[in-house]
Image (cartoon, rainbow, N blue to C red; front, side, top):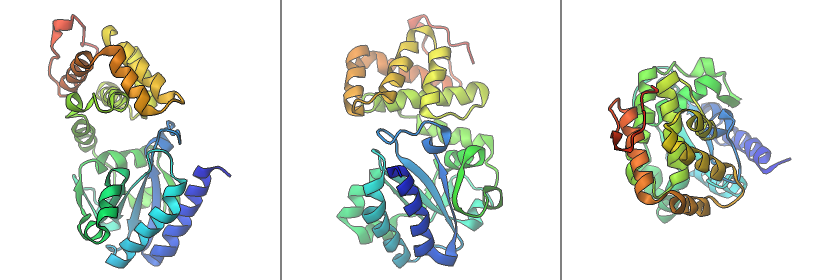
Amino acid sequence: MTKTTKLLKSLGEGCNQILGDNLVGVYLHGSYVLGGYNPAISDLDYIIVVMRGLTFREKADLMHFTTEKLLPLAPAKGLEFHVLLLAHTRRFHHPMPFNFHFSEYHRAEYFRDPVAYIEGMQGRDPDLAAHLMVIHQCGQVLTGQPIKDVFAPVPKRAYWESILNDVADAPKEILQTPTYITLNLCRVLAFQKGGRILSKEAGGEWGEDHLPKLYRPVASYALAAYEGADALKRADAAMISQFGPHFLIRFAHACVMKAEGKDPDDSDGQDWGWI
């Protein structure tokens, strides 16, 4: 039994034990269901749907279970989950409200002050439109009710706003995580062109075939780095060295402009008329 298999088994059993009759189901999305999951470089994404909002005690128990039982089995980038109410998932809103949330990004915040984190971690998240669209397209039920009985359809406009918002700061962020940003930009443009919902890996493959010729090597390099066994941070550093910061920023800026329906700066002589 692989670590991921153990992780999924423990996740389903633990949520049932902690949440009992309040649990509607646990639903997998992200790279695991899109075909791009690699424990060495991925995270595991899932949605927990409940009948009523969690009490402080339930949230504390869920976090103790997550940090003590699940994180030791987690892939390299950890875990990300939202807790949603059934009343909300059956009537889609954008941005979608969430009752609780955790990701690797928030790990330090949680351990610094668990009580404050548990009390404050709720609100609305525009990213949920993208997550729920993936669940509709190819999500998996880990435990609980069928997807069609739990989740209302996600309008394509809400999904587009969600993924466009996710890359809005790409020109500023590409030098921090060039591999991730490049592949994410590619899959955003792939949806804009043909309505395709892709993993980061598949987005890179799309970029190799559809980006202007000047920028196709960026997609190829990011894809090779993402698929490789080397640590992603080393791959990111190598990518910056290979192409240079100014070139990567220009690439990201042009992609965002195209996604926003604007004409990219044509000073590089590239034809962006493929959408």
